[in-house]
Amino acid sequence: AMCEIVDPGTRHEDAAFYAQELQRILESRAAAASKPVQEVFCGVVGDNVRYNRNALDVLSAVFPLLFYIGCVAHCLSLLISDMCAVDEMENFLEECKQIVKFVKGHKYVWALFKQTVHRKDKNGALLVLYPATRFAYLALMLDRLIQNREHLDTMVGSDAWRELRLKMSTTTVKEQAD
Image (cartoon, rainbow, N blue to C red):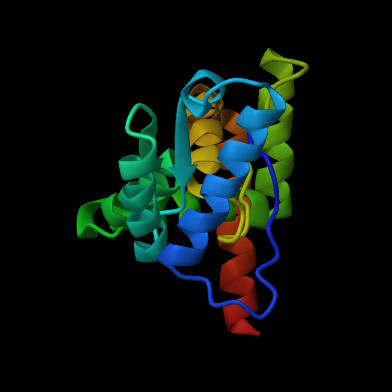
């Protein structure tokens, strides 16, 4: 659990500062419990920036029985970002986004999709598309797309879909003629 938020004020935030603050926090909490640090804490987690990793190295010499790791969530986020940058994955994700954008962006398609979902499951989860700033936005979008695959298959195989496609193509031809 996070123990304390430290405002560095005008002090420079570097490995020495971070190690000093962490040592102070660990020792004060252990003293409050009247126990050695290693009986109060099992480890320290820090962000993965270089000065934090260096500070954790300094602390490991002072408290060798504790575990020192970088933020696992941050590491996983970086790993997933790297994986998503692979061309094949990037293309796949873009295609998935385009499917969701198409369904949500055409009111008659969206209405037919919602009707298809609710016919099979009154509480069915609909497709979602979040901004890139939302944590795990692609995973959330993919999860809903996978959950709705059967609904999408049912929708595009329906008579209502064929009628809708005909209506949309006729409208597009009329708009181009005008």
